[in-house]
Image (tube, rainbow, N blue to C red; front, top):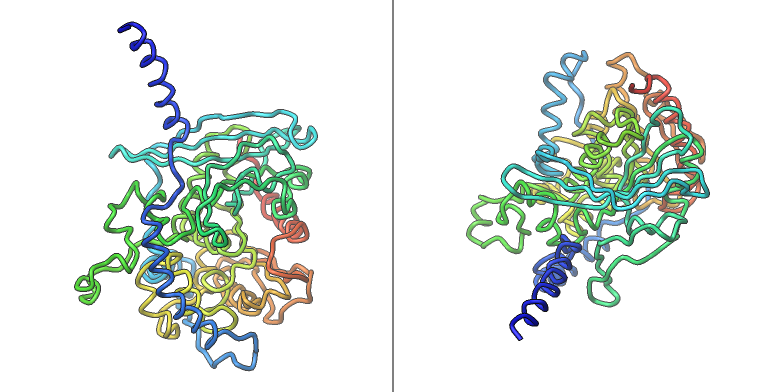
Length: 463
């Protein structure tokens, strides 16, 4: 009898241990019910802001004055003004950006040498980020590489909204471990979509154009929910008290202005993009020295912040990123900063709340974020029907930022007039406005391929 029980334990316990081992992490944010209740309390205020301040009328744009650049030389910019502006964005908008993980390890989960109808090699990795203090974080990475590339190609890096399996035509890609908030069902559910919106990532055409492409699910990096920061990469660097939401801070502490949340979800997603580049530096099939970071909508904001903080990215692409991304905040057009902060304040650091209703008092605006990418390449894209994201504000920010590229003797946007729809303009700073709605499409990708061809052909492939 004892031997039977012993055999049962030796058989079952490893299986139970294996369950936690295979899961390795849970993508369910903690304090879900409390967070949902807090969001319900603030929802009427957020809706009131949409009702009062939202407009799509150019005649209602208030007079505004942008903060001016002070640099008259590259040295002034690199040694004085750029570090100051970068610190201001960390303090007032996106929060602190922790260092890279002490150690990044890759575990190959699957490989397919005839992917995308024989055009590509597909690799699926689990990326482990480890700190010397014992804290860890992990996420899944999907990589496609041209099968017949003679040398390691440049790589596009970005986060996806609905899982690595979602935007590829291949239905044997591993299912994401991410969980998303289904508001209709009133609960978190696993991401299960497959082969949807294929133009958003355009994998097959990217491979045909000679580029590798890597993606990870943003829900797996940091769940897009009020308490998502508590299971984000920032848990490796900060204690639980630093990752609280505003409603979790005691009144006395908040009233004394002794606490502002020092980090943001945009910061967490941007850190994840840099971590993906850390991982790809270990991948011999791609040239990680020629990396482009890109993102759409809120992930376009993250791509811009990643590009500003991590100079390894040689090309930074923002697709319809809008307020808090490429669009000028002082124009107060479409989704204003006050609206976006109170609607999604978890995206930003705590101190932005002091300026959200008085954005003209903020010492920075988004043209300064774009300028942080100089002298590397930048591309900003809008859509004609996406007035929520203020296409004109995105264009004007890129045009205003171009003066920093001129300090380097480079050409950015050399006009203050928006181009007609579907036409790309610019040299080291590019821009187009696509006919259509808020989306990333195969047509957008065509502009990005042509721009990337110009950027990466200026550099020799790494040996």
